[in-house]
Image 1 (cartoon, rainbow, N blue to C red):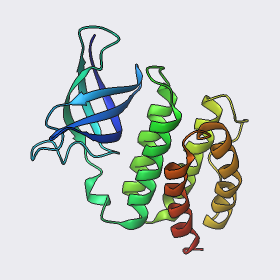
Image 2: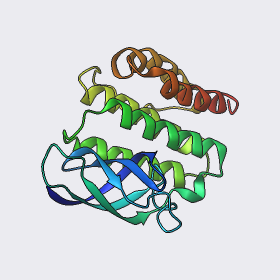
Image 3: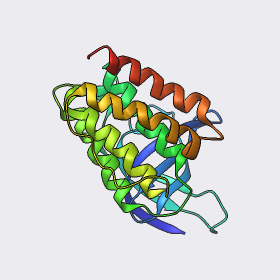
Image 4: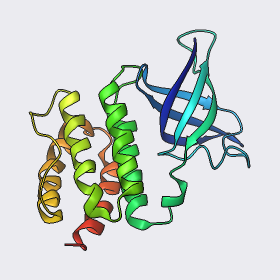
Length: 199
């Protein structure tokens, strides 16, 4: 296995002293887990942050082996992690994606939509500008997994978007996160509370 692709890093877990097991969402190959040597070291630590857009090269001797990944940063979300609302939104979208998607099944629409939602979070002047994109991604994810209808990005003011967000909590919980909802849904709960204070 020797692949190179643009990707969004959606999770990074410590492995040993300095390495990281990263999960990368690519358009062509889907969600791919890989070993990043030195991922917690000084050079790669700012790169291996969930939400970052990267160029990743995977290599493995067989399809059953966890591939090694070489990662180059193409777009950092790091500057927004000091902003509580943006950080909560980025954490939620990445955790949801990493938990809900099966390995190595391509979902190019989700890859593009996640990138768009993260861009909106980082570039909109306030949450009113990106909350609809975030909830639209949740709707799209449910639909791509076979559990949603024809809904799209919710329109209207923030109160209406939060109402749609509340309606989606049960389907997300029941269909996508049934076995692992604790920590993942807690991230969504924190985000919902922060958005609710803006209404």
